[in-house]
Image (cartoon, rainbow, N blue to C red; front, side):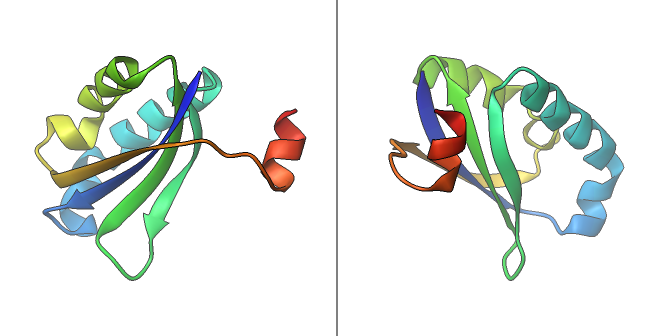
Length: 96
């Protein structure tokens, strides 16, 4: 299993995203229930979101990101993906 940190930069404000926000929230909940989404939320001073996913590999992550309602609505201007190997901290201890 690989862990990825994903940053979405939005090209519209929160008010415009509101029309699909319920779909976005439902999608993230389904990913959480499947153990795919580990954490996520907005960066308060920026028009971005930061999410941490666990998937089999990068192609599996790409499939998850392609189904994101904000992506399907054209609300994401840029996506930055970084593979992450968390190894220390209370979060890691809780998952061990």
